[in-house]
Amino acid sequence: MEEKKFDILMLFQIIFAILVMLISIYSKVTENYNLLPLMLILLSITLLIMGLREYKRTQSLLWGIFILCTSLYILFSAVEGIMIN
Image (cartoon, rainbow, N blue to C red; front, side):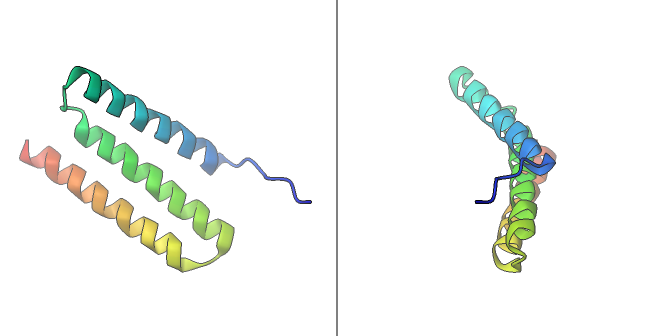
């Protein structure tokens, strides 16, 4: 049976996911939503890493491109939110 290999992308994905969770919990508890654009940027980076890992794992562009497009849309929304405020 093949052993699962821990790679650097998984480490970055876990770090960014934890950061997103901490910022969202902080925002919800304090009802201070000024950090929402930062949370969206970190979420888009997390999804970008997920897309790269999925492409690397399956060599299929379908899910990799879908997750990448989702990541770019969230990044666009975050940048637009920063520019409006």
